[in-house]
Length: 233
Length: 217
Image 1 (tube, rainbow over the protein chains, first blue to last red):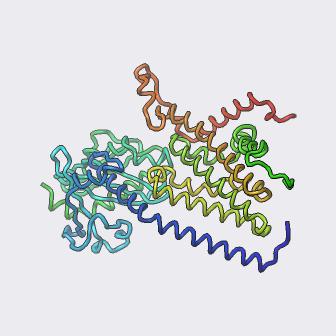
Image 2 (image 1 turned 180 degrees about the vertical axis):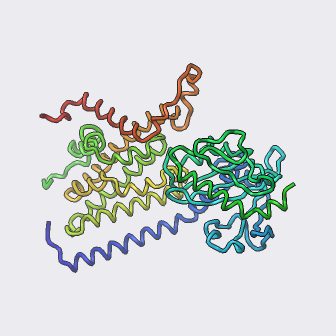
Image 3 (image 1 turned 90 degrees about the vertical axis):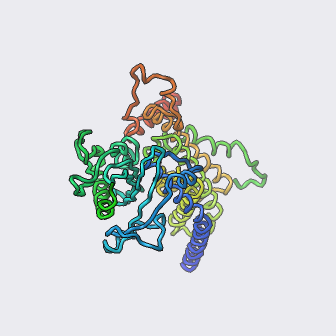
């Protein structure tokens, strides 16, 4: 192995780093439109899942247009806000704002069984990173029609179980109000009986994710309190 | 390899670079490298296949790039240079997966990034590509990637079949109708320890077939 001068080593590293940086930013820029589109389709798929419509990558957009026909943004007092598309609201960014300035998206869906459903997005923290999901409420604004959750990097087999059907289906028909007061849905260690209207069974080995999910539901849904109370029928 | 006579592209020596890691010099079962990702991505067959393919591409191309640059890489910063090459390749693979195979990229999530730390790749760069010509290095990379991949796929096949009762997502066990006679999926297969046990069984099987692998006392 021959000896290299310090000047050579510095030049070598600088050229290498610049070349790599160029290559990577080029790839990122070229591929970004496709990646963003994938995310958009993914979001539509999750929302459809919360009203029990299973979509594939190919038909997600058509099904979304068919079932989720209306969307708008409200504030914490339940007043409609103009000039912003509900689909484009970034919940993570909203949560950093003061409560009264936050945009709260509402999606209206009409599944095949004739129910009028509203879909509310939720977002929170799991063990390793963000978790998020969609909660669909029946027209009484109290009973859960369906939920879907997803996560960035929870532990497979443990926390990652939150996006599986057995876990999500436990939420069906639970209620988030008790005698007109908001109570959310809790995730109980040791299990909750089917008759318990406000609790579901937590995931064994996924305690922190379960707790994060519980906090996510109550923190996000309580902001809709005004809206839900005034719009129920 | 300094003979004046040009060596054919697929000389026996080069072929051996490609095939040895599949058997007698397998990175997982013989060198016991890259075990960590073998545990993580083998619950289902599909992510295992993608992981195998990604690692093979990354190993082969990084080997090639390092072999091309081997005379100009200053020895004092060679490990950093190797890491930069691997990391670049991995990020490219990750970006492509996100754009063209989003579902798979979601399943692999953090593990794609962890290819960077896969010891097999660094090991091949340091042990082989730094001292060999580009073409043999490329073959060596392909061979080692494939040797790693084949074990991943075998492990994933058994874990998915016995753990979830499916093959590539197709419900085999249900179609066979053996649930009605009392068969149940083994939840243990889905948990990481079973990956180690399956790898152990493969090592046992390989050693019982190939006695040259057994160390002399």
